[in-house]
Length: 333
Image 1 (tube, rainbow, N blue to C red):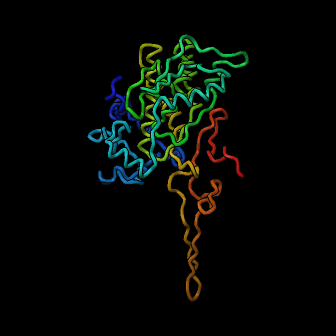
Image 2 (cartoon, rainbow, N blue to C red; image 1 turned 90 degrees about the horizontal axis):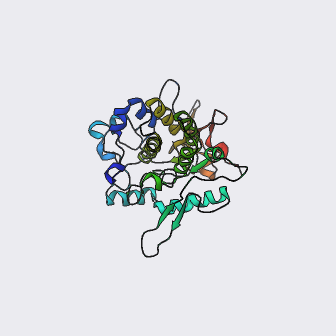
Image 3 (cartoon, helix red, strand yellow; image 1 turned 180 degrees about the horizontal axis):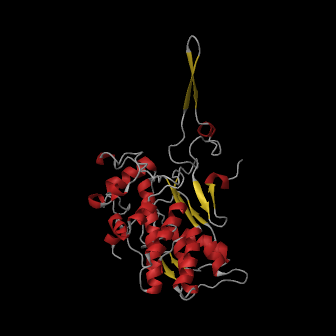
């Protein structure tokens, strides 16, 4: 994979299957059985392109395919001016892979009870930081199995392009990362899956469990598309590395469905769809005049994420096979 290949093209996904791209654009919180609602841009960076690219417009297939196929780009490919603008307007800051690796290692150190499970960090004060992947099969202590690790839930908050979950490339430099050197939380799970399965059926079942255990939310719609695409192509990468061929479309569609639930659009401070809180104006008409009352969002006024009048985001609890509001996982004070 070269640096030019880190930008996954929506046209390529569309050629594989229009349904596949449609699934990656779906917002499950707002969609109904009768009507699919897509995630929306939630940024003004594309407003100059006209209708269909305004802040509140949904991201449609037509808006990002065909002659529009190169509109959404990873941060590393964007112009320096655009990177700075997004940092100013949305506090968008991306983390280099070596820091993601260091922090992910801390998570695994705690889970395994030992260090250097997946790699050994190389801290170079005079040059770039790096890491050396661990040789051989990952070992598990008595009482814990590889399946336990694969099913352990992990969440990346304000995930951007999801560098803590998957690491096909360094989101800061744009440098591609070979599969054997990848450090994302999902990368680690898929490595373990590959080391402990033999048949395609076994691998797929375990990989699906890994994807069901990985979560992330993001405000800006273009970043969310990039994150979802990265998770989809990570699935393809690891399947090809294991079996020497690409997975079938039905497998891709199911993984895309899981991704569309687990990587979702949300205001992380409120647990609602971005900008969905509202001020309610009520007019009461009597015989002589009218009175208008204004009711602001109580959650916004009191900074209480459990009292917003916006649309609370829904996620899938795969273990219980039920849809739940994400805010229900956060204890009230």
